[in-house]
Length: 268
Image 1 (spheres, rainbow, N blue to C red):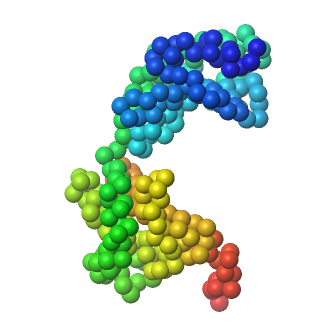
Image 2: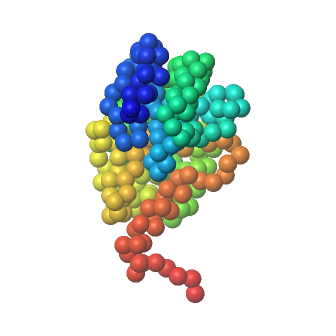
Image 3: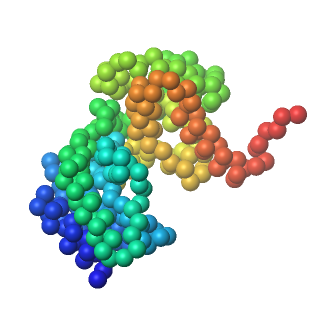
């Protein structure tokens, strides 16, 4: 008997009673999905890619900022927290695991997937804001370059100034700082692309403003989505000093200097 058939027998009916439908199995994945209030919800059984006798369950939704979770992430029982993949050696042991999965889904899983069907934050980049950035990024760059007085600064120093500005507005509501974040995204985008060495485009799939082929590399970035994500992270993790914006820029430089090793400056 196939794993798909066993999963359907042990879990399928319970999931279907709660509106989930089995979609298309892929190698190592058996998904059940549904749409609720415009949010895609998915509960799937996943098998280890390298060890066939190991499975687990993953819960995910399309709600902004929510990441896939496993039983060990939200079930308070010690037994569920102990395992990543659950191992079995034969069909009966597989069925026993799936029955335990069903118990945990009924006790915690359905409630949890409703919980992660809500955005993880109020700081959500919108299509409207992204389109505004795409249409006005040049003027915004000039405006915020003057506001932050970074016109004569090197790229890394200017990024440090952006970080400092972000720290100044961490206590303000998102709706009051959104325009500032759009301006900082324009400034950051031009800084990391050395003013004009990147193509500002519209990513239709993501509904977002993007900079393509930054510094002539294959790297791209959605500057507003990144800026909002960084601000949101900073306000939730006040003790973290590492600059995410700097790290992203330094990664781009790695790819750039691989293509242009002759430009690397060495200390004497």
